[in-house]
Amino acid sequence: MARGRSVADVTIPEDVLRYYERGGESERLLTGGGALELVRTRDVLRRLLPASPSRIADVGGAFGVHARWLAEDGHEVHVVDPVPLHVEHAARLPGVTAGLGDARRLPLADASHDVVLLLGPLYHLLDRADRITAWREAARVVRPGGLVAAATISRFAGLHDGLRRPGLADPGAHDMIERSVRTGEHVPRAGEPWFTEAYFHLPGEPVEEAREAGLAAPAEFAVEGVAWMLPDAEIDAALADPVRRDHLLWTLRETEREPSLLGASSHLLTAATRPRS
Ligand SMILES: C[S@@+](CC[C@H](N)C(=O)[O-])C[C@H]1O[C@@H](n2cnc3c(N)ncnc32)[C@H](O)[C@@H]1O
Image 1 (cartoon, rainbow, N blue to C red):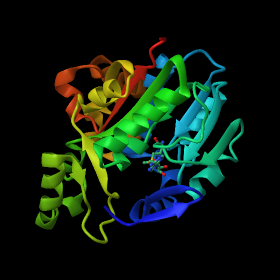
Image 2: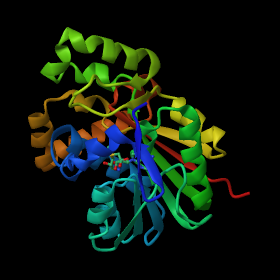
Image 3: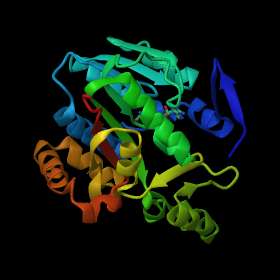
């Protein structure tokens, strides 16, 4: 694990802070596979969220790409993120508040929100104990009966990304990719531009983590399904054409809960509820 840096009372690995201080999250979800991730995350969440207005904590919300549409849908959104650049930007969005914080120690009161989103923190926590702590914190902050929804990266995302990115075809990248497939630990080589240290979940693991944290009825959804393997230009063209977009969304809804296909998706969304008693 890389050395950490403290901002306010939040300590985050130095390489994670440096990676996000480049500002890439402001545009990551605008095109190609990122746009598909945004559209599909919204599609699944809109079917799970309570009617607006509800109080939503968007933990790891970055620049507020999800907070923006949630606020436009009429929800009251508070972004929590450890990166000051992210918090500054998210706080400027209409209807959104933001503050520094760590998913493992949320600066939020017990049962203060209807929904807690963890769309990012879990894959940055390599130790399972830390991930359970983050799930427990979400369970503490959400009201009884409320929703916790968490994004994870698939165990095979790095391997399959190698079919799309010429740089990962370099045999020098094979050790890094093989380690992520065998153990879930993505540890980039020094100077690697792809992504920071991260944990890649197998399907079923997020469900076990949520249950261990005391949450009920966890259900997994494939976010991009197999469609993330399409070339980015093809994804953009499909999303821009109303008929093709509807067809794409219908196709992915048809298989979003299919266990034999979950691991083919780049991301999974796991939704669970806090028991009422
Ligand atoms: C890939 S971004 C995802 C941003 C956005 N939620 C989305 O779905 O596109 C991961 C986010 O998790 C945040 N993060 C990393 N470690 C965290 C932690 N320990 N607690 C809370 N957020 C964390 C990062 O700062 C970043 O904003």
